[in-house]
Image (tube, rainbow, N blue to C red; front, side, top):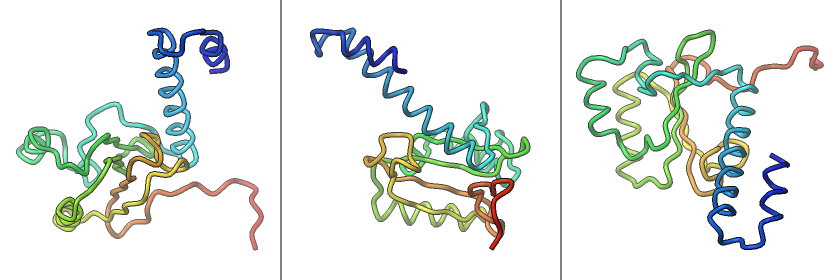
Length: 159
């Protein structure tokens, strides 16, 4: 990362293709670092398979619900990720740039229909890795279970 920044500083024309490519690489690397730190803190691993949110309730990536999702996923599901703990899907995240009242209603209806709980927060630097400050941060998990949050550190003092 430091090496890429030095290359960028050495580029005399900030509008050159090389400078633009370097800035893009820096942004992608910073995004990946934020995402990986967030996941590590929670003991989560990014699923390399489909980010279909109903996998967290045991639905596979087949059938009508999945094909409908692929055809017309809702606006609130922008930049989706599915997260695993102990190889099981436990959390779905998304980073939409904006949500209308209809999008909120759709998210609530989807969650209620499938027994999911959700939160929507401003995408701050600590939570969002897609355009922090410019996106919202959505988390969906199985209703009735604790939200997969940060793991307790070993050796932490108990009070």
